[in-house]
Amino acid sequence: MPTQTIADANRAVLLGVARASISHGLIHHEPLTVDPEAFADPLSRPGASFITLKIEGRLRGCIGRMEATRPLVCSVAQNAYAAAFDDPRFEPLTEPEYARINVHISVLGEPEPIIFENEVDLLGQLRPGVDGLVLESGRCRGTFLPAVWETLPEPKQFLDQLKVKAGLHPDAWPEDATVQRYTCESIEE
Image (cartoon, rainbow, N blue to C red; front, side, top):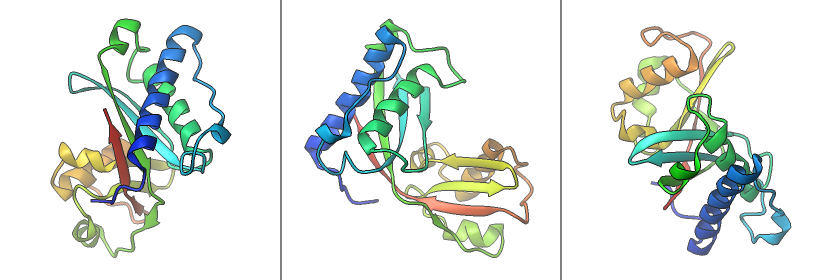
């Protein structure tokens, strides 16, 4: 597992920002605006994040960005709001649900390409429970966070379901496929 690089105090700050952005969204219908200058390093540096919301262990929303295009604290505020109100798989979060959600923040490491000869070679290089993957083929693209290994623990199963998520057939391997791996630092309530 990746080592913890975000101090406990900053982890608590990020969880607070995520919750505050969702609460703000319930009232104002927009994400909380945060000033990154008001936050310590590494929260004020560019960072990529995904926010996963669950109620009683069931997915209630998950939104994020792979690219570190804005300060981490801003990424968390934007993605927390989006997970609560803009995930197309769910209706917007309601106030009664807000009290029941569990917030999970995934801070993504920099993706790196995996060099492989074929699908079997790729499967042999995967690190279950550690690797998040980005699969691309033509205009198809999908990603699974490392946490998905909890529900899809076998590499073949993990990769097949990632192909489906990307819009590809699970039983075929596209010749133009590229795969990147990344790790995540998990922060949860």
